[in-house]
Length: 504
Image (cartoon, rainbow, N blue to C red):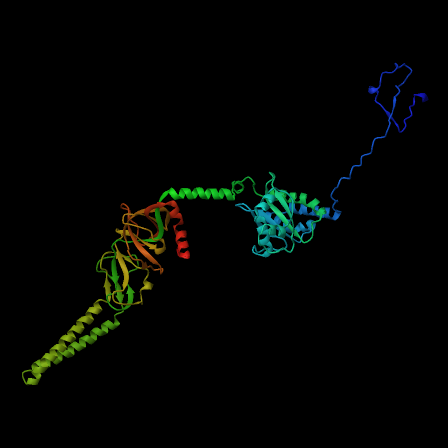
């Protein structure tokens, strides 16, 4: 390029593209390049002043180092409990809060406080947790927190605007940092409280830090797609209320038999009672419980020392009376006075003989014989030996093992309308999964005191069919009455308790 081909460019000239130039003379082979055409500019363009872009101040290096340390610590937690403690306590190194609460989504909806900074346990009724719980329970707060946004709030002012009475917080400046799942739903949140305003430099690091917490949290869950997790996401207060209303409507129309449960025992159908024939002390039981006895077989022996001595004394009195009467009879013909004593001595002799017969009769009753054949039914020998008893006191029973029935002790609180012929299902303790059917035969009209000092109605039932069970077996019996709505069956006891409490 020659010196004449250089084009000077001043401040008021501008180069135009070659494509926009008007056609000029044709190039020759000696011309190395085309010349550019100069176009003068009348006025320079006006300068536009662009305002500087406002940006958050960069956090200092020490906060960044703490952020990295906290993220590493969160990912090294071995379980969720350690991660919860790290979230609520260690985050103070970056956030600089005075107090913090870890809040998690509850099963039926809403929020529940699970951890508080700097303490191992906390009281939900304490001033600070109570105020936080009331703030979280507000509908407008719940909607705002579930959107997954970082929220700055003043709890005291918002509670006062909502006219919700709550204790005054020592640290009213709140910062809500939500923990979100991968699908964006919020499952927990860290609520930090400060007395002063929040530093913008800390907010730059808290958002990614809380995301690291959420990622570590989901990594520690065993399986987020389990049926329980899906059910927890599906359950809500509205759905629970709807399900309860549907269940109440169904319960109001579905008929079910009215039934009650009560302790039961297999007993002899017509037992023979063994009672004390005399007043005394039991010396020995001759047969153990459950033994088979025959009619007339001795089973109980009383202490007979006193009875034997009474017999001997009665014999001596009889001998004296007999001798005295014989003497008077021999001398009755001698004098008139002896004739008068004859009747007196005869009466004394008769009394002495009657006393001897009574003493011998009591001695014979010191041994009790079985009134019938069957099984000997009583608790244990140790309960009877040495026990003083009165006349007619019940000692034991003798029952036929082939003729048994069900004795049910129905508490007064569970008493329902029963009638003869009602159904009974006996669940024995030895086989609680199989029901033994029975039919009610008789019901006591007045309650009696049971062995456990409880007022009960005694209900007797026979076994259905030819089935029999061993005497002494115990279990639980279900007695059934008339048909009632399912709602009354389910809420009979609560309704009765409310009426007794309220006096209606």
